[in-house]
Length: 184
Image (cartoon, rainbow, N blue to C red; front, side, top):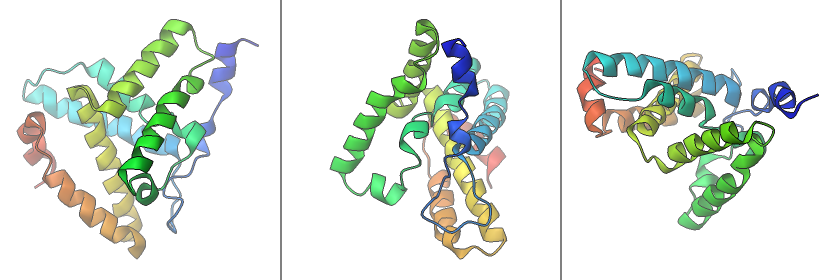
């Protein structure tokens, strides 16, 4: 069996549960979350096209698909812990950067390198494409929290309200061009 075929058989992200520190009505895997991030990225790209905002769409979608790949190794680290202080946040970033090559090690070298670079670009938020994916990631979080609150799960209500407020206050110039078409 080829190493690339072994890579295709790895469905680890389907088994990593997000929000594992909160009771959930509808547990969500990282793979499920990544689907919504990619889908929401497609929607955001549509609105960016409508306002003639230049962006590399293929690159943006690739970033969306790999943005949480390190979680196959690390799991979904609880946000309050991950951001408890600068030292912990930096340690998590360092470990993620060191382990992301493991996620793509069975792929051809050029492809592996390209995917690592896209993941790094997202982690560093070093491009408009990465910013769009981060916003799609936030929309996925908001949508998950909304779903949980609609069925009475009060644990997600403060997260929903906090993240919705953050969404409204994002200042990227490209977001300002499309924000009113997405949220009122």
